[in-house]
Amino acid sequence: MTFYMVYAADPPPLQDFCVGLNDPNFPVTINGLFCKNPKDVTSTDFLFQGFNTIGNTNNRFGSAPSMVNATRFPALNTLGISMGRVDYAPGGLNPPHFHPRAAEMFTVLEGTLFVGFISSNLPNETNRLFSTVLNKGDIFVIPQSLIHFQLNIGGTHAVHNSAFGSQNPGRIGVADSIFGSNPDIPDDVLTTTFQVNERVIQAIRSQFG
Image 1 (spheres, rainbow, N blue to C red):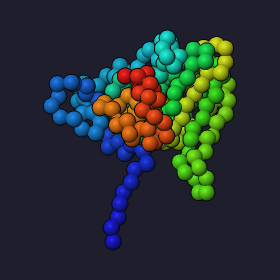
Image 2 (spheres, rainbow, N blue to C red; image 1 turned 90 degrees about the vertical axis):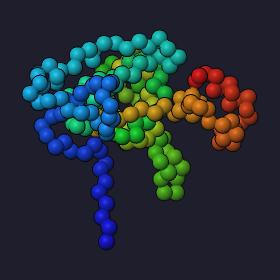
Image 3 (cartoon, rainbow, N blue to C red; image 1 turned 90 degrees about the horizontal axis):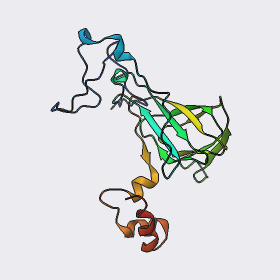
Image 4 (cartoon, helix red, strand yellow; image 1 turned 135 degrees about the vertical axis):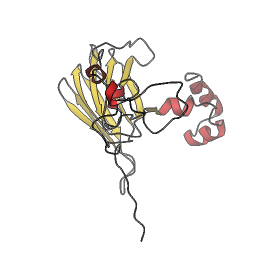
């Protein structure tokens, strides 16, 4: 008989803390960060400042995602948590994306957002969209690895904070991955997938170069 162990989130830590050591010259990469010597750890290692900074939404989507993960905040290393912030201009969109290593729970701090995620194939169904409108103080949960989006439908700036069950949840933009990969996905793969001709694919790809 064979037994398998599966983690649905980051594995539990083996010590009280492991403040990550960010050294670009370190010759080895592991799943996580090397630990700073506990004798060298101070209270400031557990402090992150600047999360209240408004992101620059002057871009094609009118949104500014900002992630505070173990890379930016090494104290999160081995703790299995991280946070994010997204600012929105009026009409701003956090385009369809997913986090491969974590579920997401977010709360609206300002503004009104239309949010939704798409399920995987449910029995006897296609991919279902679960969506709603959120106002200040509302909380919404996105299951791990499911495609989701947020759209500012109010007339003012909007912002939400997110909590993730991973020190490095990752973020994969759907359109960016498909049309902005390096090297390009072959045109015949995309024309068959989307049932359009090469000119349409090339026109879309030109927006993600």
